[in-house]
Figure 1: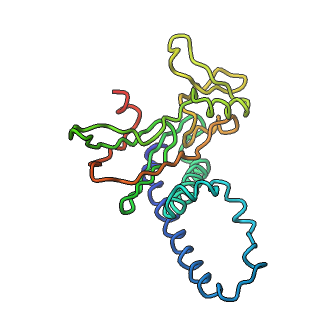
Figure 2 (figure 1 turned 90 degrees about the vertical axis):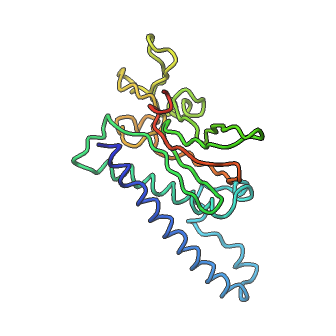
Figure 3 (figure 1 turned 135 degrees about the vertical axis):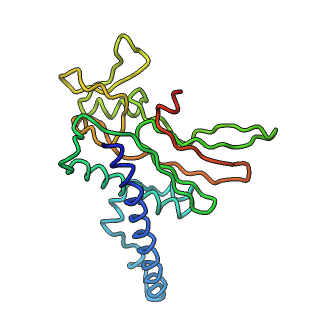
Length: 226
């Protein structure tokens, strides 16, 4: 039920946030063009509180990526946050100890922007110099054994360890109970762990397509594992 809800709702939320962001940018550019001639040194030094709070974008990142990436990144962050909030408030879906991973992709011209939580993957099929088809994973499997993920979870009093009969699978546990044992560090739902380090903030990546790139597969962890 959780996965179906996210599948049906997240793309719409993402496109809505993107359209709003693009419209806002057009308006701001128009205002900027109309007022640039009257701005003095005091005006140009002004930074709003809203701009300061946008910690997801830093100056170094802006220099590395095209402008469209910044707009879409904000759309991804907003849509994923709203999706998780909606799940928490949904009376007919039990999300306390159940959840889902997600991977979402937007193609704009030759640019790809991918956002994911959990270990669902985006895999690009590309040709090498010998014309052989190669798989390129565009996403990171966001599991609890990644150092940065484990550190966040432990700082929030969650526990990370693997069971004796499956030592290769790190899991997230409640501070004082050996449950639920989630094998993801980020997910929608699973609200029993949201106060203990589990988050639904997507990891967002960018790629510029070339003529050697042929197709992309978006798949759950079950497909990737097999």
